[in-house]
Image (cartoon, rainbow, N blue to C red; front, side, top):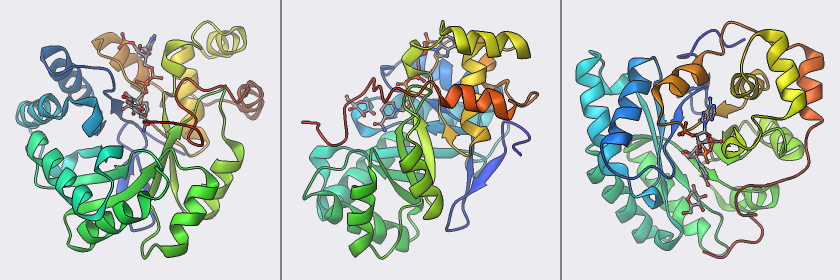
Length: 280
Ligand SMILES: NC(=O)C1=CN([C@@H]2O[C@H](COP(=O)(O)OP(=O)(O)OC[C@H]3O[C@@H](n4cnc5c(N)ncnc54)[C@H](OP(=O)(O)O)[C@@H]3O)[C@@H](O)[C@H]2O)C=CC1
Ligand SMILES: O=C1CO[C@H](CO)[C@@H](O)[C@@H]1O
């Protein structure tokens, strides 16, 4: 299936989204972040995932500008995602939050803009704002994050445009089988956040055994497992050698048995908040 780091999935509106990207949660504004994003682009990454709440859009924007120049790329070569934070959910508020993110990033459009969390009673107005920006041609694709099946069903009752992406916590201990099936049936692209479970899975014996068999690292096995089952993945690292390592997953294939063994590690364990029970 996926051939290389720049291979894309086609969203239901025809937009091409890379299967692989870099996430930048918990990386503050500054040179460490700028260098990480630049290293990623230099080594072939084309997708960057940030959010207003990460408070690092200025540095992401700086890195994008420098990376485009240094690698002789144009804006259209990159796929940039940001997210509207909970405090800004509302028609006017969300439109204003989009402008604020664009300003910080120094961009005139985003490839993907997501509702970060399904705050009850708030996400439908925010979705209307995303739909309006999309229809005005200001965003290439719109989606949601941390939506469970019932949130998606509720949103789609009133939505004019179906979400193109749902970005959720997804790793071998939280395999989200029902949600994945629902999204695939509805042509909503699943995207994995904390794909490495924030580093907590790297010494898992089953994953180590599979990694050893393929001459790969555990991180590479997990990320390969994502894309082999049609899930976009965005591991975070600020270390150049890991940025390179994480992306080096296009020269091997997990067997059906490997895939099933990883799937069987599911324990419905989260590192992040439960979308049905969060309070922020
Ligand atoms: N929509 C949402 O609600 C959320 C979205 N996200 C997005 O998903 C992205 C990824 O998730 P995140 O929570 O950052 O966690 P990840 O699962 O990507 O894990 C990141 C951690 O693993 C370490 N790491 C990365 N690669 C390797 C490697 N090859 N070997 C060993 N350790 C490694 C990193 O350390 P180091 O940097 O030192 O290499 C870091 O500590 C975020 O950055 C963000 O963009 C995340 C959380 C919530
Ligand atoms: O993406 C994320 C990381 O930051 C937030 C907290 O500050 C999380 O809640 C969110 O899911």
